[in-house]
Image (spheres, rainbow, N blue to C red):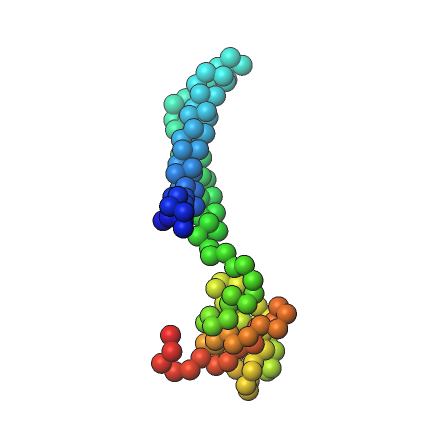
Length: 143
């Protein structure tokens, strides 16, 4: 991916993955060093299986934190509410005329431009009034 001036732009998702792997390896090495060299100085000797259990538990914790955090890196940034016009959404609470709509994974206050719209129906955002979306029923055949 390049910018208009020919400079390469970093892919945040890729760098997040690389950083996560490197930081996990470094943290695992620090934990192992602590258990192998520092704890015995205080008379605490842990067996090898305890070291392995601690490292596996930390690796599982790191993986879970990576899976939780990684989707936030891949979300597209929205610079203004108007950029959502034309997007598809799903009605979360019935619009009669007002209710809630889920668009791009976010809940928005919305009102129907036409008649009532039931929960679960697909809608298209036609305009934005403040932070309230104005929606229309999605027409058949339009994706």
